[in-house]
Length: 103
Image 1 (cartoon, rainbow, N blue to C red):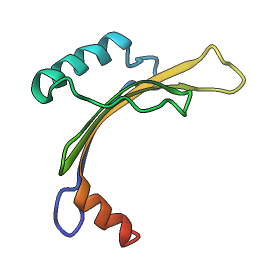
Image 2 (cartoon, one colour):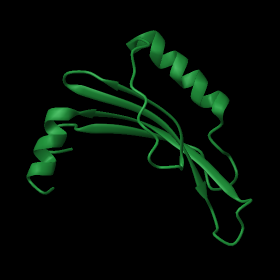
Image 3 (spheres, helix red, strand yellow):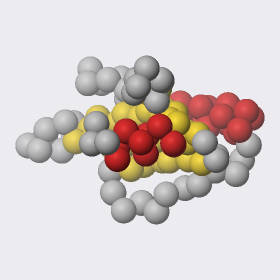
Image 4 (cartoon, one colour):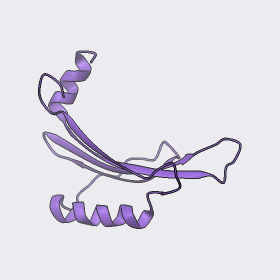
């Protein structure tokens, strides 16, 4: 919340106990969101090699992101991979206001 207004909602997927956020789960969510918001989403340029999949619906007032990441649990055990993701929805105007006020 910012100034008593809801600025964003985040839902996380994947856990440290080995329950990874699978590509199939990502695809299912993407299709569900495409049915609601359309297939005209942005795919960010993958500057971060940990980003596996991403879809961004960028409307005038709201931005919705669906992302899936590959994080290594332990530098010493590269076979231990944690794959997580999230859905983030935020109000662009309120977020910009919040950032400009150094919240």
